[in-house]
Image (cartoon, rainbow, N blue to C red; front, side, top):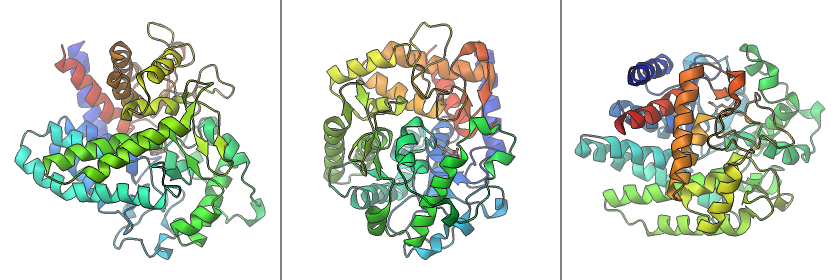
Amino acid sequence: MNDDLNGLIEQAKRVLDGNWLGKSTKPSPHLYPHQWNWDSGFISIGYASYNQKRAQQELSTLFNAQWKNGMVPQIIFNPDALGGYFPEPDFWQCERSPNYPKGVLTSGITMPPVHAVAALRTFNKATDKAAAKGWLREIYPKILESHEYLYRERDPLKEGLIYIRHPWESGLDNSPTWDDPLKAMKIDRDKLPPYERKDLKKGIPASQRPTDFDYDRYVFLVDLFRRLKYDEHAIYQECPFLIQDPLFNGILSKADEDLVEMGKVLGEDTKKIEEWHQQTNRSIRNKMWHELHGAFDVFDMRANEHVGTITASGFLPLLCGAPTQEEAQIMYDFLDSNSFCPMHDATCFSIPNYNLEGDYIDTKNYWRGPVWINTNWLLMDGLRRYGFNEKADNVKHDIVDIVRLWGFHEYFDPFKEKGIGYGTDNFSWTSALFIDAASELLESQ
Ligand code: 2M8
């Protein structure tokens, strides 16, 4: 078993080497040929256990593309790989914004802010603490600025809850949660700018990717942003998709906590960040708790109501300590039920991204049911925070086992009998977080 795991860790490192672009790592060889925001966070967590320099560089390269208003873009385009993805810089036209940074090519939206979590982990794993502290001093103010941007520009009601303005900002592009908000958008197909999907030309079945209906709305939103020159105030007035998401806010609040830790190492005043964390947790608890479902739910700011479609994202606030112990227990009972694959059930892997008994379950379609390693890695920490250690260990073992059995895929079928991973192969965050989980398992033996 140990030889097996050591061999697989070496294989995972080779996947990351293959996706290494010189200063950062692309998510996969063909489907995603550029640098992605939260992918880089997860990738640096993997590097942190064996290559401190790369872990630092991954995050530093990302933050070199930070916008002047503090936003960390969703994609930093690789100029040598243009032409293989949609949408690319010619479509985003971010130079229309006065906040667009010089010398880099980026998209005009952001993603869940995992970077403080990744940076603290990188620092904590460093053996040469003095050198790592030098890097921490450089990255800390940049991450702080990115949180300032979110609280300043994306929290109009000053609740400590950030809205996202595009499904791509959630990281969970075609989650069933977005179905209703996307259907409610009134768009005129004839007025959409012409576009060509590239994701369907990479050998992945269309049934495992978002639909054309989804893409039309993704494109409508990008077109709106560029017409409004990426002005956040104008976007807030006009954007039909404005969502407060428990995954995004749960990650932000956990990242606040980790930023405080980093600040303390550096002797900085962290009072403001502590207040953000407290307020975000309070508001997640007060505004996002869904009594009926027993989990946190997305709040649609346009419809002014909960969306009511619970996915595994609804459990993410375990990570930042938002729920009370009582709420956490209610969530746990739901999470460890047939809906999300209970422990000791030999037929499935935990934790599918969407309720296995839900109306829209599709276990091979992207964010509509498969198991994803990144969200599970975060949920593992959330479970541990509330003392659900056996379940956390079970999630860790499943992360390792699913990769051991089916390889370094992007996402996986939750049912063991299917025996299959989906999407692209040689996927970076699967490899990186496998390295992290498998190394911890080996150390604990
Ligand atoms: C997927 O999203 C991109 C757009 O950002 C796409 O479908 O083209 C998502 O899984 C997202 O979470 C991930 O960061 C990205 C790259 O791995 O791919």
